[in-house]
Length: 242
Image (cartoon, rainbow, N blue to C red; front, side, top):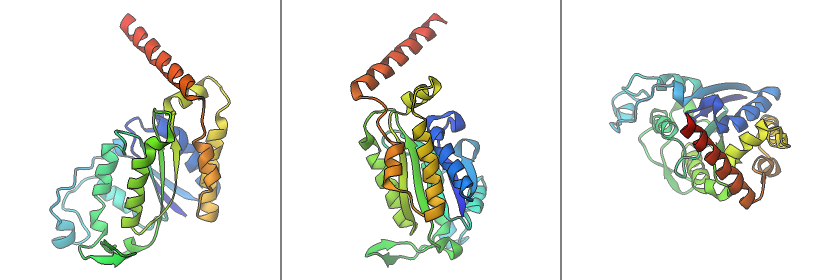
């Protein structure tokens, strides 16, 4: 199984998104999957110009010469695409969305009906069915903060004729990192993320129970708010002393 993971966090491996993404990828590797990890922060990708040259003038190729050529090359022949992002204004980070806008060359301009809905057909081998998974974290307590992002990735999956296999969501992300650093008993969340990777390779799916374990409550709402606010207050006070 060839897996391409794209980490859209500007903090890359130092961000809270990586706390879940990395064990997920470790589980995929342990089960025999081949993983290529890309970081939007390291890629120079220009915005889509909306010129449709990749459909009409240079079919299958964008007229812009940038690192999107690397991304599309990595995606060829992939079985799974993993989109990883912190939650920014109820959605994915701008660089990750910018990258996804640039996959237009993998489609064709024609319109077909799939499942009773207008879609663009894929081009060549890009028409093969893949699986898509989402990894995300946010600083709020409630799991429903991810609803808009999950709906978006679901829609992207349908447009790509891909199977959306699930979302590894970690609300209370900043506190989760602090709890890990303090040695508190939350390593079961990391093990659940790793198990999700193993399940994806072994069965092509991720159990709902495993996804719930990744997202499990870390502490009651009021305790979470108090924990977070004290941390930021202490950080501000420390900065003022410098």
